[in-house]
Length: 87
Image 1 (cartoon, rainbow, N blue to C red):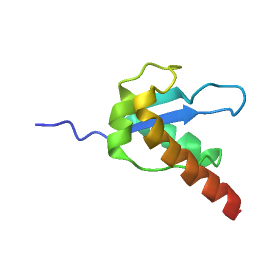
Image 2: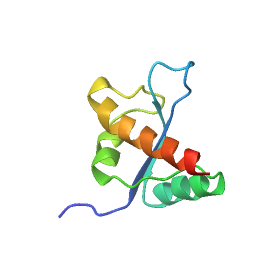
Image 3: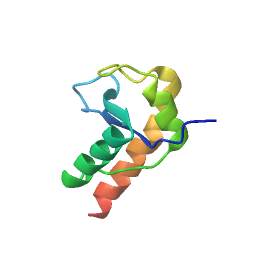
Image 4: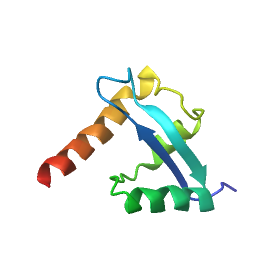
């Protein structure tokens, strides 16, 4: 039976300072809940994507996102930029 525990991952990208987004937090269960809670508290946009969370969860903390995930992460960043432009 597959583990259905909630998972969350957080990435950070600083344009001009980073070559690629980095994994800054990941967890499951209570840790996933805390990541989501903190994101909401600091008005950090949240995008649900179970497949991407699975792939990101394989990375170590502070790892740069590998090139094979650039497209998926670019879609998330575009989503965030659209949110910011609406405000």
